[in-house]
Length: 452
Ligand SMILES: Cc1cc2nc3c(=O)[nH]c(=O)nc-3n(C[C@H](O)[C@H](O)[C@H](O)COP(=O)(O)OP(=O)(O)OC[C@H]3O[C@@H](n4cnc5c(N)ncnc54)[C@H](O)[C@@H]3O)c2cc1C
Image (cartoon, rainbow, N blue to C red):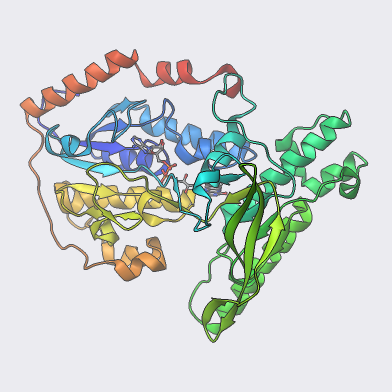
């Protein structure tokens, strides 16, 4: 960071959307300080995307590295906004030109199941920690919580991530049974082959293993599962999308041997001696267009494990205004946060779409918008048309809340020498405390040998 006045932007979260925004800003001569809570900046790519996406993971790691390990970027790892950094202090006192929040959605949405919170870790789990465990538990030096991927688990969900949870449960339970028979398998290879085919290759029938397998519970019909999007609101498109979803589920179930039960909602955990032994469920039906529970339809499904996979929402951070489960924005279209000038959100934290390409595009879009409309550094003709871009990037639920697109075209003065010196000193202090010298040296040091 030089002494010459220039724009300096703080980006919180160095993964897909944060790295993309950083790259976009740096390409325009803006200096970016990236604050990342973890030692490594890969976010959901490392901890959310199941580890069988091994090739894609490596490619995404390399893309993030290339965007963060370049002149104009100062990386500050192992620094948590809300703990090591105070949000209001960062925004008001550090002196950054703008603050971009690319911190993703890491909080599991509440399951709505009676008694679930008390049973956490005792037969009830959320998707995010469960996938984290799956991705890391075989690494040397893993010291996080250990979970039992119990047979006969029930998964509450309906989206793509909940299908991944079912696949993890099937792969782990089958691998454990095969180990008992002296057959050692790699779950990543099993996933690549498909569980059914892998078992066949070992000359083993699933029925011989004595497993029940897991079941995905979804409150609507399989044709409505949010695993594939409809392209428009027409009836024909609805029918097409429903067919795609049914096909996708059929394929997943036949390859990975789990079941799906539609029109079913979880109501209450049943426990014995402080552990989950069942889930009370009810049937649902449509009355007209309204989905209702069928009176008298409750029953208890015996199970030792219930995993809730019904969506991820942003983690509340002290100082960040909330609007229910989400952060509060003056304008959802451009992620402009309420109550703070120059604070914008990007990627998964605001789009709600669990998708790498969408997060990347959104990161670029917001960075371009901030440069054009807030910092005033974009060339004439480059002003981003937020309104046109919004419909593609903002989910339907959010679109309803989207306010008027801000029309401001700012031209913020660059950060002066005093503020630059302050930012530099604060960052240097953090780097000293961490023993950080350079991006490459740091990443090499914090990447365990078995993860290289
Ligand atoms: C089970 C599962 C399966 C998926 N499968 C696919 C798939 O097949 N294809 C696909 O395209 N997408 C998939 N996704 C989604 C995809 O991984 C994400 O949408 C995308 O990676 C999000 O990128 P992001 O940068 O917006 O957020 P994140 O990756 O969540 O990045 C946020 C970053 O901010 C950091 N951070 C968070 N809080 C703080 C804080 N307080 N202070 C400092 N730093 C912080 C985090 O450590 C992280 O590095 C899947 C997700 C899950 C959970």
